[in-house]
Image (cartoon, rainbow, N blue to C red; front, side, top):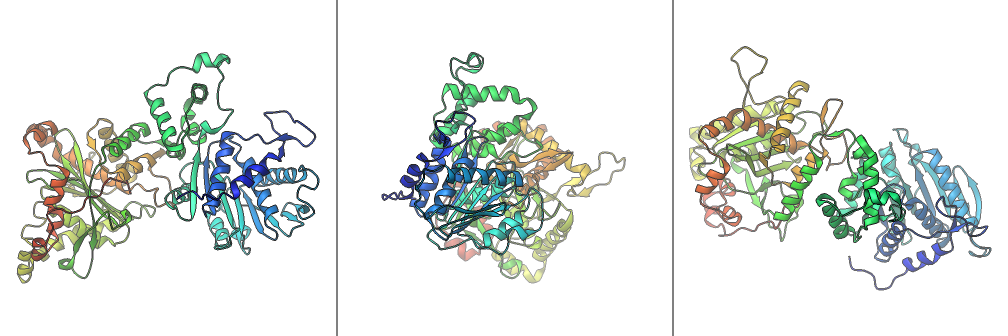
Length: 627
């Protein structure tokens, strides 16, 4: 958003803060009123974001922060400013517990009481001060609300409409529904409305979803981040003996993080700051993840989950960087379901017209005639009620690795229609082995898949099948066959059912193959899901969360595909020496653009007349945005 050339609030904020007095643990008081609020870089950043945002017409702000940056101290000063500036405004200050409510109330009273006599004239002074809130002589009111850290009655948040609200340590709120109820009463159009959310991360929870929503919504809200590097005291001076132990040139990982901070947040980390974070890391011990959560370098690092990360986050991070730097192109599709299977079709999406959120199927590489493929399908609610999206991944197989070629993810269709998509992909990537999670609704998939085969074989449908060249559709697809390792019998079961016993096996197989560089992933969304997966008390998966971005459906689909490769495909390819290097050396190089021009995947679901009208080149999405 373009900056407003007529600054209004930012200069007023800066002038107001100069007259504030506080009690500081870092400096001595300069007079009886207290210590001037000499702002840290973190506080200046917060003030600029809110002040500039208001000048740009933004009224909602989400501040993700590190510990001990003075953000709450500064934001409470904005509270006092806003209440004094707007007579009769009704606002609220929400904390996570009673202790913080009382501390913040005391600080607000100190701010207002320590201004010089007559600073506000006779129009603004405290006329009511108790645990429920503050009342002011200009008619303004600030209610003091406690959200609590555990689920409780929503009565704390109901019945009042607010034009101004300040929510502090939002990630600790246990009563998310109460917060949603509170927000229902927020003013929508009042020009003096202001809503500030500020908090540390504390893992994957509702705060993460809110912060990322604000990051993607440039029109109505603003999300911003301040890491440990924004605190003026987070440094070790060169004369400090610790500098000799922890100073020095950055290593490759530190240099990469420093480059990210400079690029994303326009801050150059100094040697003194680098020495400080090294000192903190040296004393963190087994609490390294907690340090990343409390003192993160970047916003992505802030949202580490509790428990032990199942995949090595730094290794996944390197893959994320690789995918972003390579700017992988893909073809985007959306399926149209209208009546029976013969009316099932695909719509090619144009990045110049359509939104990335509309893409259900991403294709990075079209089918190769002699290629072998594995397909993993994790249906919605297949493992538990939390995993509510259909996820299908397609990987091309080699003796020494598998390479992702396609991915389908949606929560907008039922299991039967998702099976139609599976059938389509199995028909397009002909020589394939399919492995489906058959728990829950997954039990519907095999019967529906077989029904589609029978449907195409019925003589009455021969003309319709011939018109689409579907005579052998799905004919080469094979089901994964599972055999219990502790069974002495010869019996097999088609596909895979995840239980507490088998889940650990396929996930550890996946992790081992990934760490061994046997899996090439194109999907940023899949890689981001891998960063969410943790292991807590023997349970492996993403933490329970209402955040639609905190899922692991793609990961389990990948685990199913990987198991099919390991158990049934890899051995034969090794015997034939069909490694990635050998096969790629003999195959004619095909560019991504040529893959998309061939458009085999889309062509399968098109009528013959439509095929004739296909343009020679279809639009490519410019990069994999990971959604």
